[in-house]
Length: 258
Ligand code: NAD
Image (cartoon, rainbow, N blue to C red; front, side):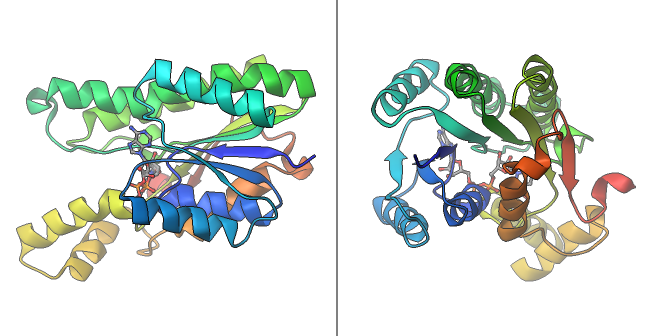
């Protein structure tokens, strides 16, 4: 039977790249995320183009625990257990800690951290029953080190790495692994606002703004690609990776080596 892979936040950016990589590896994809209907249709079509079986789309708002519970119960009841869970959906908001809007704090913790707890707790019983599972949490370099003006994001991503380790220990004796991938700057809509802000501050083009961000933090001075993150995710799903668990894997052009 075709195994199911759920990638949260897969209508865009890194999640879409990972969904395509897993579809190419033969998984049936459960896609999730927001966007204009044309954007969602395009993401579903991009994944369908490389899939043997048609992808499923669920538009659940992952900041709502009850909605996650309902959506996952429906998918699992009709399609079977989720074999691969990629917790990727995330958002960013930048401001100093003493000026950080409390509703943004709550929203970022709900999406970037608590959503992964809910999907993990709801997918694990099915993984345990079939004696196989792969959980991949898309954390960030900000799960390992901090930057200014990102208190909620840094706290959520550090928390996500803690959840990764705790889940890995609890599943260590079965063929279920839980790992975190920690990307550095990856050119997606999530960082576009930060690029534009830097370009405005320095009165330079947005391309030069992107280069300025890279120069500051990422020694390779190149963006990570969504294809690279898809390929690593696909590898973590293989038998060759069955002894990699509880790990936090930086894909950051040397950012965290500094
Ligand atoms: P993106 O903005 O391109 O994609 C985010 C996805 O999450 C979209 O599909 C969006 O619709 C979805 N989403 C947003 N709010 C949601 C909600 N409430 N419920 C369900 N889905 C929701 O961003 P991206 O850069 O592809 O980021 C993906 C992940 O990678 C995030 O967790 C982010 O923190 C992490 N990350 C990104 C970078 C980077 O440089 N882009 C670096 C490190 C980590």
